[in-house]
Image 1 (spheres, one colour):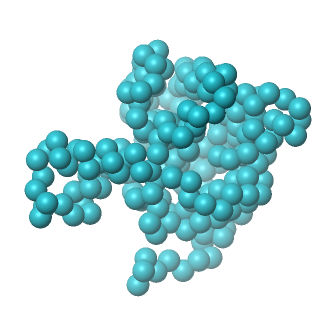
Image 2 (cartoon, rainbow, N blue to C red):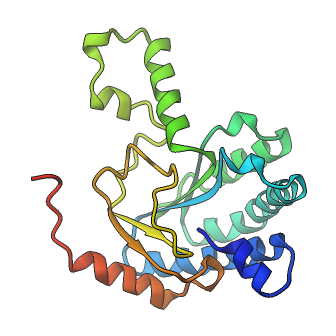
Length: 217
């Protein structure tokens, strides 16, 4: 979800204003995706590299996530949507971990879609943690295969993404779901995330439906 800070700078606002505007985009995108039959929506919210940003911005982001999760949990329950949060959550503050755990539990019965937030997430870190899991489980070298690794990713029950959408004009994967997006279709737009509209989502989905997926064949 790129472009929050650029959106704020264009309006001479602090970075957190862009992140708050981005939360509104999450809400409308989730509902539009559900209406269009999208069962899984994964949003890259905060990367393991984002800790290097300005300390005040990082603190504000953490507070915004906790505030948003507590506020939006009721809506997710009403919409029958399950919330998942993936990443190195143990590195977050105790109050934030508790807020996440409470929201995940409250929405665990959701049957009309899954919204996953990748927070304190990195694709390389996920693979490293999967390998650590293999070692901890005593898996021998000859027993290591793609299935063994996939079972130890953060969300092993999720299907691999069909479509990767990049906002803000970026044309790179940026350490997002490196294992899972091996055969995902990609679609990029210069639109900044707070300005990402339902029409933009429809354009991405339309582009996806017009492609022939070969999976290397």
